Image (cartoon, rainbow, N blue to C red; front, side):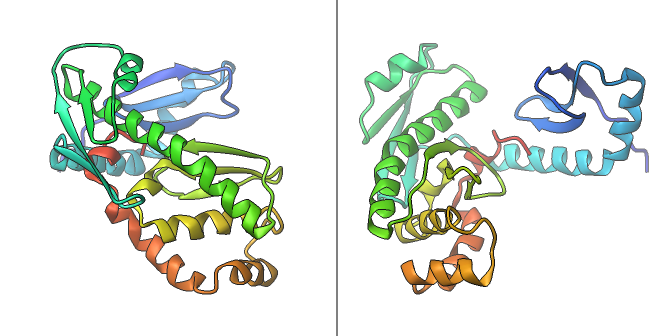
Amino acid sequence: MIVRPLKWTLRVSRKARYARLQIKPFGGLEVVIPPRFPRYQIPDLVQQHADWARNQLEKQSRLREAARLPEQIELLFDNSVTRIIYSGRPGSTADLFDHQSNDVLVISADNEQGCLQQLRQWVRRRAQAEFPDLISQLSLRSGLKFDHLSIRSQKTRWGSCSSRGNISLNDQLLFVPPDCVEYLIIHELCHTRHMNHSAAFWRLVGEHCADYRRHEKLLARSRQLVPDWFLCDLYS
């Protein structure tokens, strides 16, 4: 079997602390290096992670083949259904959002990549509109305070909490039932007290969510609720 050499692009980043490989949506394999990283070491770096890169590129290809632009977006979080109209006219995403309702979303991009980006941006904006009030309510109810909330798109984590009390939530939680979302937020709020998964941490979680074990199992299976069209535009 002939294995074709990997094709990759190079990006020099002043923010990068070390060299790394990543899969870009619609962009294939990218090598990111800090300015002083020796260029002659890049081929060896790619070779070391070649199996991982090929697996990720193949996964991305399968997702893109399976994904179809949706006719509507169904969010389990608030049991809403938003119909999508593809106008095919280039336009400003900011202008689009000013004229959207929760019932109809108009996508003006004239290519698949642009459509997917606008769809995911819409999901992000919905999450930014929904989650701040919810986490504030749960924080007040539980007495567990946090410092700052950010909304991101991640493939491996539903949420996280830093040692400073900054909580990050995955915008894909909109595709998850609301009781699971509330549990996930309680879970992260408990990390403001215990930055681990010790017995003390789980006792605290249990005080605020008695059936947390059931929610843990549900969240572990909830990745399948996120539609393919959303995942195919994420970094692998």
